Length: 374
Image (cartoon, rainbow, N blue to C red; front, side):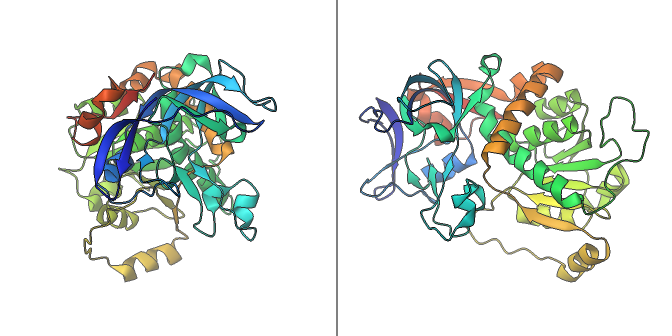
């Protein structure tokens, strides 16, 4: 079978022939990969900024955002069936018994950093024609979401972040006073600022809007750009970063209750933290590049604001099974409310042999491009 792999020692990215995997345990599932989304992590892997092959291998099959179809199941499988559409989880638990998170199936909170990740760290990924995985790592996607199911994994970032915000904000009188605005949901009195209009930012904006937040997206590009129009279509407001300084955002928005950062630009994230409203929460989901980039931060101002205004700053990475299931439900809600906007997130589909143009170049104005191994 064909697979896109990186060779870290020789710094090569190639399309190679790999042995097709076979079922080896009773709970194994064989999956034909239909779609693999391309993201910034894949491009950084192909630039050899990180990426670790499995033990004993000189290469790593990349790809972690995927959608597949079950084609064979082991005799002990009960969660999925042949013909099901599935999205595999990425992170796998460490083997340390002292890690309570991994032992309880919450490897997204692994305390040892000895987890593995398919397509990133010590396990082959999904940018290939077939995989075999244990049924416990597979999440079923309804057939009606076939065209957009590959967005489930990046949407889990927002699903997990929102779940954490809800849990944290329970310490406050966070619920909106009745009556809530008609049709706006339980959180109609809350405002959310999304930093960045890439796939993670736009999916986060959809999730926040679905949760009832008045949603603002702060990004480069005009309000009449494809991304700006998409934000408007989901009922959000696009704010042009080129013409609006971060310090002016409270005047445009009002009190900001939640900041959802999806850029990986630390200077922007900490500038925005300085304008977070009272009792607000700021969620960081981006990972800055590894090249040193000194940033001046007024730490006294940030600390003063966080203490005196009961603010919370949290980081969020990876996702649990609950988050994957929430993302599938959210994707279904997006399909019902904003079918055109949801479809617009996927800007192109390309065969596997077009990998170089997607992984080694910068496609113009793409939101989410997808490679199709099947």
